Image (cartoon, rainbow, N blue to C red; front, side):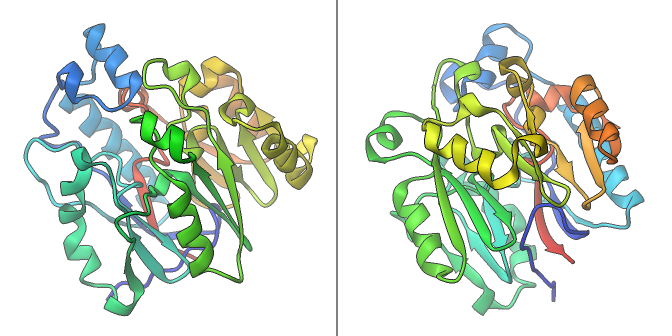
Length: 304
């Protein structure tokens, strides 16, 4: 059996699922792309190749192993992109929630079936079909669960809208003792610089009481004000539009003190080190072309 328990983003990581890039299907057609950044790189003939993505994920795995993290990988399904394991399922407390992902990604859940079978069935929750929510939109912070979502009109309008109000309401009902805060995100199917694909593309807690934020990723000023008041101005690292586009908020915490980051994030990494963090740098630039980075490629199962 596998022990699962997640209450925040930064406690000591013990067990994680890390995505794979083997046989991911190569460059998709423009019609097969479901985010604007992938479309951009298909049009520019700069879409990543399998060899580079496999190498980047293996470098990430080596850092995780360095800190004695138990790493599971999805089983390989031919011609299926299985890099971003964050979204197909996610853990809150001792429950594993299986997402209703977009149809293009539905087969990904089959690749982690062998892991799910090692978790007591009473702790595996299938989210109702009308409640849409993906793991990238779910951020845990002790007594709080922050959820990025889109209201009905925008959810039906944008392919990049992945979590709806019913998904937010489902989690709220399931955890009545948690404080559930929903944030509407800005969406664009055509411009990656105006699109927050998931909440972790514009916001992420780090350390004990700090966070990285791209304020323009939020639709409502009151949500930005809430986070400023919640963390405090001095504890927020603000990102530029270019840094958001490069996925600076999508780094990954192994513990309160250790953060894995992309080596090209020079300004962010210098700030993190100045605040006392150990920054483990890896190359993840090719994977970032698919509008995801380090947090997107992980599904934590156990933090202590």
